[in-house]
Image 1: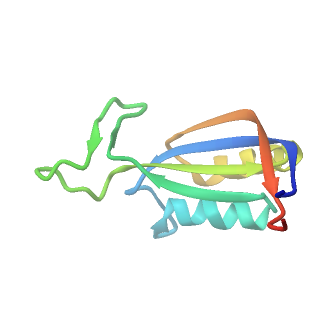
Image 2 (image 1 turned 120 degrees about the vertical axis):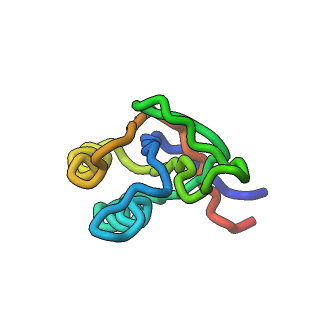
Image 3 (image 1 turned 90 degrees about the vertical axis):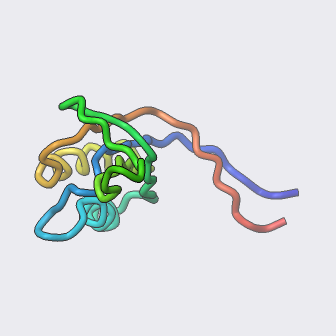
Amino acid sequence: MMNYKMVKKKLLRVFITEADKERGKPLYYAIIDLCREKGLSGATVIKGVAGYGLHKVVHTDKILRLSGDLPLIVEVIGEEEKMAVLIPALGDIVSEGLIAVEDIDVVAFDGKS
């Protein structure tokens, strides 16, 4: 039987686009680097096929439109205390975007049977 434990964590989602930059590099890389620096448990970047945000501009992967501005979601998992430090730091690098935070239960498997 696989050993596991369930723990309470926070899930933070940052909604941005591929075109967003931080000091010349893609913003999602800067977010990932920041999360590692702040000791968050993990982060993943997910590319969307369509979406819109604050300005109601639709970003899509349709062939007639350049696909270099697709929506991205950076999902980050971590402890509440670390999220409290991360959010203000994100405010320094995310000039436009949305952030959502929710409570989650994380099931962690230890890989041993």
